[in-house]
Amino acid sequence: MEWQQLEYFQTLARIQHVTRAAEAMSLSQPALSRSIARLEEELGVPLFERQGRTIMLNRYGQLFLKRVNRILKEFEDGKQELRDLVHPDHGEVALGFLHTLGTSLIPDLIGSFRAKSPSINFTMIQNHSYSLLAHLDAGELDLCLLAEPTETKLPILWTPLWSEELFAIVPLGHPLAERESILLAEIAEESFIFLKKGYALRRTTDQLFEQLGVVPRVTFEGEEAATVAGLVSAGLGVSLLPDLRGIDKSKIAQIRISSPKCQRVIGIAQVQGGYLSPAAVRFKEFVLDTFRN
Image 1: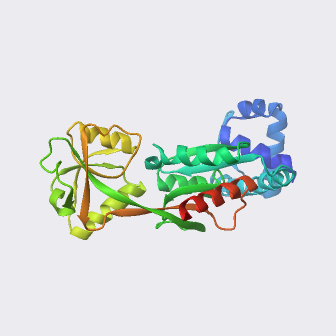
Image 2 (image 1 turned 180 degrees about the vertical axis):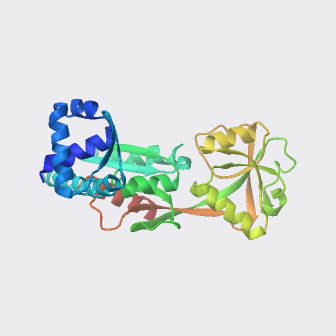
Image 3 (image 1 turned 90 degrees about the horizontal axis):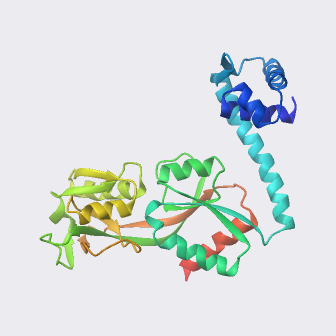
């Protein structure tokens, strides 16, 4: 088995078309077909279901692709590790974070870091917790800022950073809009606008209502906190959100909840035992120092 065969197999599995995959790798179509045939012969099983030039992975191919992805990822990590040793002040950090952190915290954090390390660049993914953890496990992210993972089998190292208070968000003109604080039970019968299932904040809000023994009436679900706040301002319901900077608050009231304690903890996560480049290590230490102080 040759190293290139694994790369050919990975590319063909992604594109699922012999001619287009060959063009992407600057190969002839017969050369690619021969390489895959030799690989299947060595493994003793077919890897694809073929329909003309369009092909799909079969169950053997799907199992083998997982291993090949890991093998090639380890190889790329090894090359990157060597490059990082030669150029420790350069590099790139792949960072994932929750939607609710994108309005101000992430820009402020990265801006402060780059003032000290201007040669380090970032690629970023903004999504909900489960998606971020999948990207982390796939090696597409170095670090994630998210609530503590509670439903994952991944070997995740999560370090808490700060607690974030959650407030009742109501439209101006709401009977409770002028109150400084309320009980969560006082809005339990309202129509709610929440983030979708699978989002860390949604899991937290669901747990808060479980403490009350109440199933909230959810009339709208959004993908971003700013969208939720906008729907509240339009009088379509109420919500529970952290204190979000960078959104229009001119038409909403933010009310403290005195009971139960409404908060969530945000931390920084990485794959336990996974490789972190010097750039990623430097950013992680910067984040830890920032919130430790």
